[in-house]
Length: 193
Length: 176
Image 1 (spheres, rainbow over the protein chains, first blue to last red):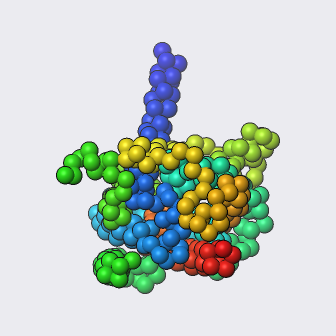
Image 2 (cartoon, one colour):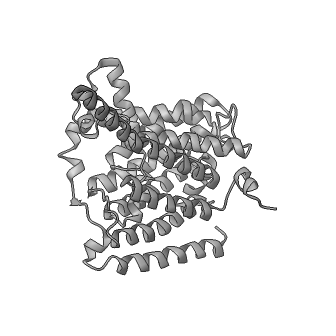
Image 3 (cartoon, rainbow over the protein chains, first blue to last red):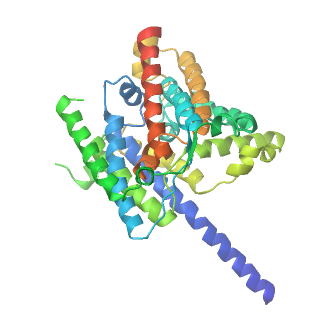
């Protein structure tokens, strides 16, 4: 009896553990669908953004940020969720980000959009880009012991948010940031970007 | 006339519709899974899993101990992105068959598949290295981190674009 109970508990746990995976898969399907519909699974549209001739990518990102920000801060203020802020440093968020940006322009896809480009059928993404990204992360993993206490810690400032940094109420940043982003988007449309 | 079906079969939506959709998706991801949408750690996990298959020793690397080499939520999210994009592309008749060279690339560098794949591989290596160096990518920092108003993510996204804009101009105006 006891072993049967344990076994059923075990399968229950295994089933419970699979639910996050299914939600991850479902969110990914919607994310990929939206990235393709927005045009962000295409090299031509991503690189045209970096050449400043087409602003589709920034329009998607900024409208996602403003929508997401208002909802996420609302849910935070209701106590429904907790934020998940990444800890930062000058080494990571300036030097690392510049390296990322260079790779972004050379490849013409980023980690999320390359998954979308693969689904869209682009062979340069499947054969060249995917292998490159995996190899690049592996090189980082090999070098990590040498980097972690050096450059990655340089100028460390921890996991702070802008309202935390300014020591103000969340909405004192969310509201002006939302208005500012919407104004930038109106300006994009008015300027014909 | 726009119907529900024609909306699904349209190749492109307004970027604002796609962006607002992604924003709403972030609400669900936070409230249901308690996690922000992000993708790049999955590529690092995949690299560690491949090394594990070959040598069986990847798990000893401190970085793989930190990120843990298992198929978890974000791994499935990345698989979902491939499927979701495939679904949208098939529904709208936009699935690309046999396309090795994007047209913008071809207009500057010709239609050699080998050249484009070589450059994509090199770009991918730099991108993958930079994504882990910077602890996030255009999803994790660029959308999920910025919408939480994380200082690290706003600095990152500014430098993603500074690096990207400068490099793209070098490629298309100095090299081409």
